[in-house]
Amino acid sequence: MDEALRSLTERIRTESGDSPAFERLSATEDLDALAAVLTEPGQPLWAREMAAFRLGTAGDRRSFEALVLLLNHREPQRCASAAHALARLGDPRTARAAAALATNELRVAYALHPVRLLVELRAPEAVPALIVTLQRRLRPHDPYRRVALACVEGLGVLGDGRAGPVLNEALAHPVLAQAAVRALACIPGQR
Image 1 (cartoon, rainbow, N blue to C red):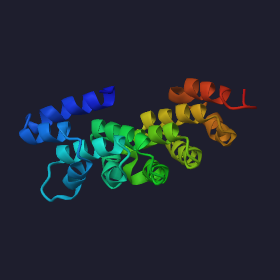
Image 2: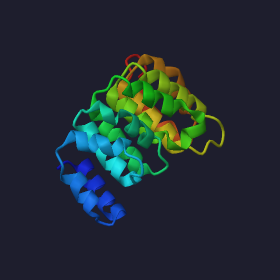
Image 3: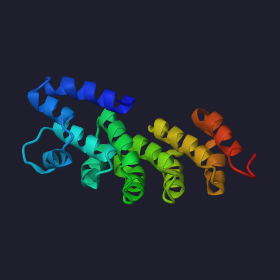
Image 4: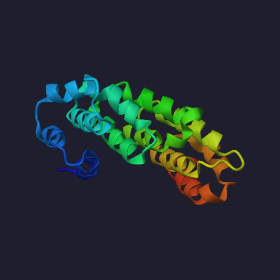
């Protein structure tokens, strides 16, 4: 059992009250039974999350919509689990969805995991989305410094020259300056 599944299982076991339904969902190998949980009315959120995570990590694209909704959830643990599963799902829509969530200014409080997922995917959408998201975070008194820092670090990992101008702007922000220096050092011609 990998660490992400172990963490999810422990959290959901507690949330479910250790119900028999939890035991069935965590033990079944029947992907159709897991997919049914995503469409049956009245299923609790923990059950949908467990089913979507297990389907996603198994590469079953029926989990895509549920995982994207969880990626944009207000609870960081749900976002992290969804990002983990989406990274393993292999659905070509994932990068576009993550970019839309990362750049949605109305949901910026929940953009941290979409930003990290974009970096992990290394998709063509990643650099433009991270640049846009970081530019918006460079405004005075912006409260989303963790999102900004994730963008700076991610742009360094991606090492794309298009990020140079926005990373140079980030140097003026004390919270981001050190990470921006490291990120710029990863971009050819920016050292």
